Length: 184
Image 1 (cartoon, helix red, strand yellow):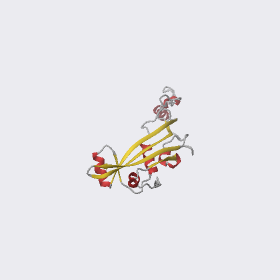
Image 2: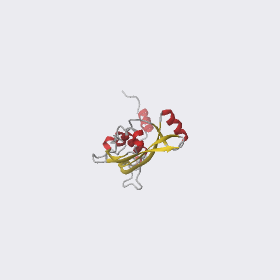
Image 3: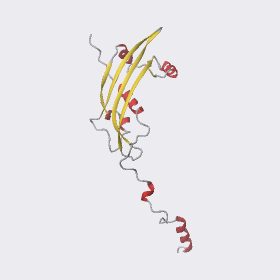
Image 4: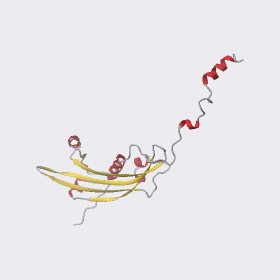
């Protein structure tokens, strides 16, 4: 029997897990709007830049109960982020590997999620794997991206200003106006 073809944009998670399905591929970063928005403005993703991903379904038998439905997901890509020290582009590798337990409904998912360290989602017959991959890559972003050593440090705000002694005192200018008398 030929294995079933699964659509990663409309994945029936339960069938995928019961058949121990496997999918893998690449999606252009241009299809990940939210992730592309985090890129440095001068180093936006090129059309050839992709996110590689793989997904595997698993149905685990449980003693005295229904089998558990699992989805194992991994993804990686590289993206130029804004360095928080020098504001220049910083090429950053993003990787994620997550395991999701699927519960029959939202209420069961919330209950299981409170009692478990695993990521729990509600069962769906049409999971958009691309959206899940983008969500996980967004969660993999560093909190404060920065170079170990920046090539050009960001100039300090005071570097461009006049020394304090040379700056005109606004109150001195006001006093000079008052001394000059009324304007006719």
